[in-house]
Length: 123
View 1 (cartoon, rainbow, N blue to C red):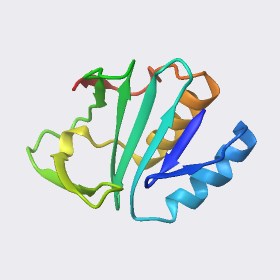
View 2: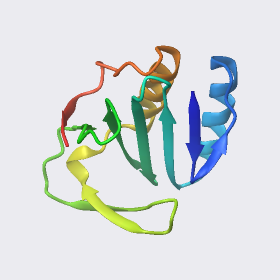
View 3: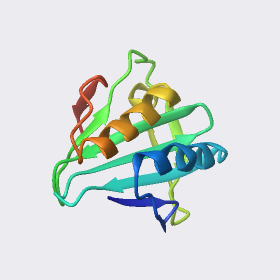
């Protein structure tokens, strides 16, 4: 599984290595994290402080799915991508940080399967 943190490839060879890697990533208040499975499926996590959301792609070029929360206030949250670009995305996409990490671990352990315990919506 390919793991990219802020545009840098990170070697994570096992689930035992994933936990410490996620702990290191968590130390950063803003980041872009990608995991790509050999099947072509991918999951991304964008974080800005307490706000984070996930995107799930089934294949290259897929519009994919984004997380969905109960927060529908219409506010936007800014995220700095690994290339320095700042994008704004709806607060309604944000889910709990721990839920994001749990979904990342599920994706890793299950060869790119979409975590169904997370609420998703079409991107």
